[in-house]
Image 1 (cartoon, helix red, strand yellow):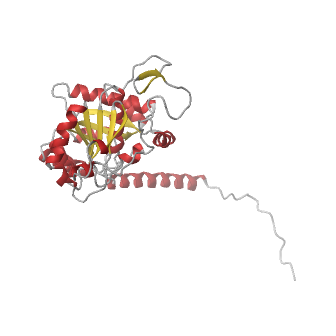
Image 2 (tube, helix red, strand yellow; image 1 turned 90 degrees about the horizontal axis):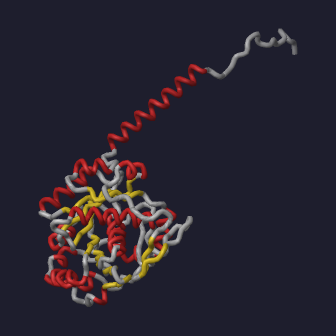
Length: 335
């Protein structure tokens, strides 16, 4: 083999790094990301904030429920306790409810939402717990006879419930679980195909007449307004409706459709609770009674008829609030 010419080293180094091309690539990537975000935002028709709910719904705002810590939520479901943080949020909502209702107080309340997954069942459970904590007698009734969940939240037997009572298969006492001196829960019982027929029955009206004298508040956890008419029928025998909305979960068209159906049914809407809001939004948009006033370093828990100091530290659940209360799950989306 003959060598024609010896290899020579390059007089200048050629680098593969080109700052102009790198900058251009970075600029294009950012531009593409922004364009994608704008396109997705136009496609996504869900309501994003509590402010958007308030803007399209002419309902008084009762309160904002933040996204609770998932670990705390899971522990609370197992121990059937409500965390101190959740208790303070819902006691603020109860205060708003009393002020808004001061002239014509509603004692029989239906809690609903536009669609499933907005957390109306947990809102109903925690509001009932907070009212009971204020020493008011509360009966929480799971009236979502298509997809009941209260028996799961409270971890109680659902062998007999509202559907059994309304079909005259069980007595009122046998379907009511008294969890503490101030809080009772009636589970849904077996799921039924046409719950609205039960809600229009004479037995339903007889039950409400009886429980009105035994409880300060009767709270119905009802089905979402869309697509079944169950809530509209139940709303006719209730004294007011609380509407629950969850940002980034429900479309504006669904919220407006549900609101229109409620208006057409001539139901009285007490107010709006926006569930699962961001911590920032809750901090920036506090409702009038969202602050809890108590002595620094001393939380007061409730168990039965006694008041006693609550435990402190990094304990996930506040056991001394009461062993019969339920807290929100991590997603705040039950119901």
